[in-house]
Length: 124
Image (cartoon, rainbow, N blue to C red; front, top):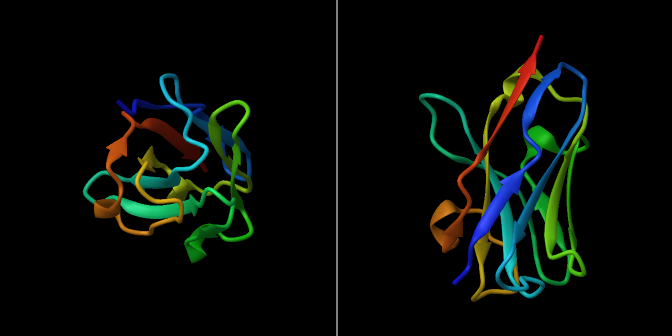
């Protein structure tokens, strides 16, 4: 059973930084496709960044140059380093896993397992 858990959210001022972590305490996910999504009140969940098992990455244009997704297979953790945060980045951030694919996805319905989410609030 895949059990994804996010951590690292919080309150930060604009232009600050946060690093989100995503891990599975039960199974190694070095071969999984992993993604980060976010959802603001009243909006649909949207793609942020994704990483393949071979560590190829992609991200949405809104975060390019500011956010970086990476993975540490020894620690069984995927990270989302968020720099130069803006108030519009405020959202609940979710980690997603697809254990059946080694390449990344951009759509929510392509992931099978989701974490509970972690709140990121950026004040102006």
